[in-house]
Amino acid sequence: MKKICTVGLAFILFFTVISTSYAIPTENEYALASTMNKTSNSSFLFLDDKSIIENYTWAFMRYDHYEPSLNFEKIDIPTPTVGSILVPANMMSEEICKTALQIYHDSKLETFHALDEYDCKCMIHTMDAFFKTTDEWNTDSSFNYRKESAVEMNALGDICFKADLVGECYAQASFNTAVLRLCGFSAEEVFTIAIQGESGGHAVNIVKVDDEWYVFDSTFAPYVRKGMRDSVIFPIYYRSPITDYIILLENDKYLINFGTLFPEYIPTMKDPYNNMDADCLTDIIGHIRPLFNYSYLGKTQWNISDFIEQPSPHPLMKTVEIPYTVKDAVGNNLIEKTDSLVALIKNFVSNQLDYEVINQYDKSR
Image (cartoon, rainbow, N blue to C red; front, top):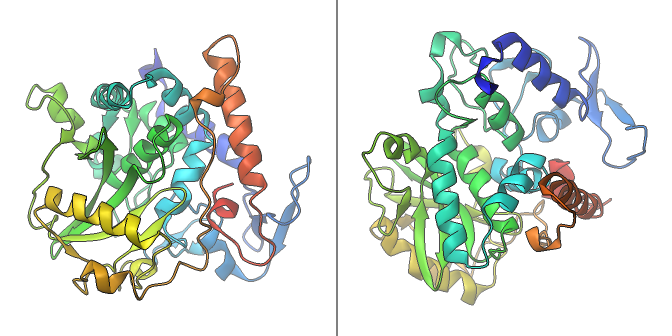
């Protein structure tokens, strides 16, 4: 059984997976997987400038808000945002492709409910999964600030007796965005959304199904397993104070940032950005604000008509979506179809290399 894995073995296997993508530097060497010179031998570029590391190595695995890291000293939050890297990275993972193939239905509504059922069975928040004193990922003053990829969520699930997928709210929302995108939901129909109040923040999904918008919060999955809720789908989502402000919407194509309440902690989300068509964004915001009791738009409390006139796209965000879904998978069984879908997306992501401006796809590889 999956749950009998020992902690040591699980983490050894986990770091073995990571090491296939990233070189682990010695004390005096800082390795960066070369995005400019990818070869069949997985070439690496060694850098003296450690500031570059923050945007690549562990980019979607962990950040510590200036806490020391064993291999890389102090690591800042990756840009454009953690989620803009997480979503495409997840979409080319076996875990996400396999999940999408398993839950897919011809009807988007049926697919949505299938994801609801899947998450209710499998998901748990990191803080509920492990005790602080025994979680090897914590630093002295930080508790679970990392934002887990689908690979890590699965690896953590191997050592958790409570659920099969372990991740904090941002990780779970990024997981769900990636799955639904692969199930055929357009980049205008599913987003990871960050919400905040003066006391903290949270991340959930907003999903459009049959012309209706819903909030999807898989962190409520344990309550469904306990019989306290029927679903993690919410037609209305009012949890003041954390629903007081809508901060950000994102997926593989879009990054709309209204401005965080906590720029000192999340400097990457301080400035407003938008790479969506004005009419489309106005329509989406008009439909989702009522779900959150008409939350303010960012720290500035933007009026949407003023917002669409001012912010420009994030310079590191490429307005291109991953074009493949489960319908493009080929094979005679789940494994073959998963492998084919992973290969298609990895090839697409590899072709997004921009030699002048690094983008979210470069960083997700």
